[in-house]
Picture 1 (cartoon, rainbow, N blue to C red):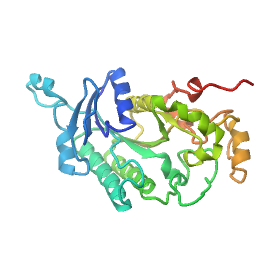
Picture 2: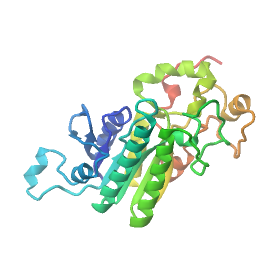
Picture 3: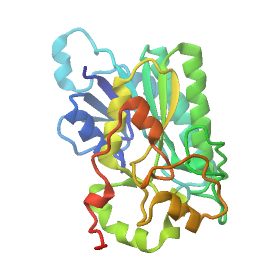
Amino acid sequence: MTKRVVFTGGSGKAGRHVIPELLRYGHQVLNLDRVPLDCPGVNTLITDVTDSGQVFNALSMHFDTRELESGTGPAKVDAVVHFAAVPRILIQPDNETFKANVTSTYAVIEAAVKLGIAKVIIASSETTYGVCFAEGDKDFHHFPLEEDYDVDPMDSYGLSKVVNEKTARAFAMRTGADIYALRIGNVIEPHEYDRFPAFVADPMSRKRNAWSYIDARDLGQIVHLCLMKDGLGFEVFNAVNDTITADLPTEAFLKTYQPGVPIRRPMGEREAPLSNRKAREVLGFREEHDWRRYVPQPAR
């Protein structure tokens, strides 16, 4: 069953790949952003998603002029995907990053549930695990990083994402809506696989990303699977690919480069330290873009 989806932040690095994937699955999409998305069949409504009034309006409008032909007013929106955000620290002052990300998420979820939209998917982040934007060299508490981890970021961006997860949980409990938070890993676009040899050559360069990543197209699959999976209430999913960005098996790699950090369960031979096991088991995610398909492997 295809969905009518309002997508915020679709013109950004992840969104411009996720939206075409959603179209490939047959969904209809309206993009809310401050700049247009160059994607045939998708209208961009220029919207400030920190403004509740604009969000309420945007979630109750026609997707494009063709829908005027119905003569019955805007059709119901089935789901909202909220990716719009200040995407990292050091773009805006910290207070503005926190304010924009928290305010926009509250505005989007509130508008959705009050308009009777029963499915909301929000972009959380790997930064909630506390190392990505940490001050200094901070270790993870344990491996693998799974959704029950005691998240403890010290930066304005990661903190905003923790608050957004709590906001999502609160609205899900109050309204019964399905609100899923995706802890998105380091987003890799198709043209960026030429960076991986350097990642492998300098293992500690990937510590802040937990030696993990998400192909932007596979992120589209995860969003699609969330759209199709009903009845979970509030849930958090790591949105990452399957495989560690290293040339050693996972446990051997972690014992070598993170010797003081406990490994609290057996891990797959090449399992990403930021594990997507829950997404695979609950949503049925099956990655299509393993980095090893795109990067020449040394002869053994």
